[in-house]
Image 1 (tube, rainbow over the protein chains, first blue to last red):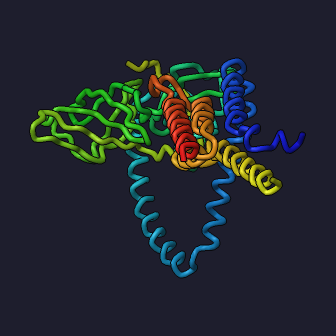
Image 2: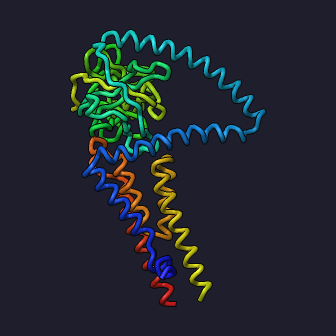
Image 3: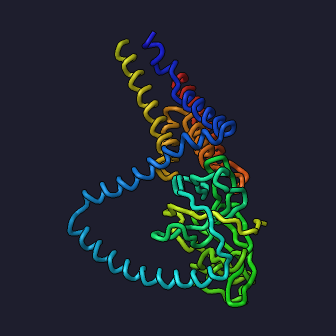
Length: 262
Length: 96
């Protein structure tokens, strides 16, 4: 009997896997709050596991190589700290123009690259005041409670959990503007944390220009990192990276900015 | 006879382990690694890519980020291909 159950011909792990996946799908559709209650600890455990595994791997690395890497990283860190300070000042001056309404701080339960659609799973839901269409602002490290640049919008909400779709998600389109002349443009998500936009060649947009989203004041969403041009086309394609690394966002602040996506 | 049964048990264990690792990977590891594990598993269990695609979309898919649940779609495609390849191989073996 036991052999019959475990034999390769009668026992299909694939069928069991499919049944399990369908069960999980039904759980999400019929009881979304229970679904996230079950999976939130799993995501949190995966988060802490990845942190610990990084520390474990570093123990086995060559010490001399590590020392040189540390030295190199320390130099880079000092440089980045300076750059970060200037960026923070720039963002603070820009954020003063925005309405300083307090937001809802939410922990990020799952993020890319584990999450393949450029979405964040957040540990706050409708019970905490989160509603569809609210904007998620990244919280820079060490500045918990304060919102940084906007990174996405709330696209689904259950009682205790919600999901934010990042502006970089494929299929996301938002209006914004760029440059000294506040040139309007449509920003499209390109996946993997990147965004694209197309503007006229004569606009004179260069790498380093900041892209803003509409809202109460100026909301910087990203920086142009590359301008791709085709000599036969009157327009250029802007490659935009978010102001913060979306793959390491641990906290976000959710606020209602009163704008909606096109 | 006994050897064949033992081989069957080991094969079932390998297939089970692959399925479990693929599910764990969906939550723990970056999606390219999960895709690789699921595709490797398809050689032994054709339904694994479809199951993993469905599971990944259950966890992460948002209609706002695209009309098509890409992982379920590609998972179904990989499963269909795996079934076709397996049936062809089986026919080839029988024909010999």
